[in-house]
Length: 70
Image (cartoon, rainbow, N blue to C red; front, side):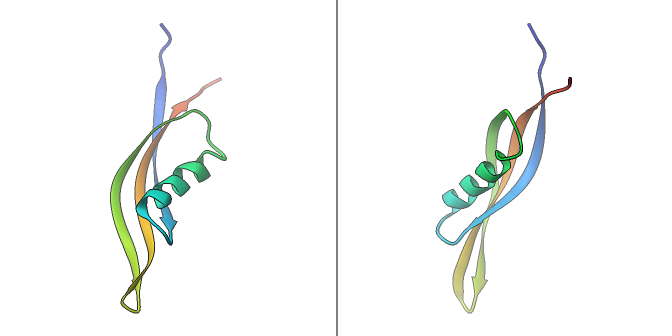
């Protein structure tokens, strides 16, 4: 059985529409430069407020990916 090591990083995604889209944006953007993404965990949700109106939804995401050494 081979051993695996995973790295965990923190990301913050944003969206003008929803927390779900904010989290998805964070993971999909990371996926453009990282390989073997494994698990994404929502750590915190918040909103940006300007002039008493919500202007953005933000999601802090912990993302793990397989750490490959060659």
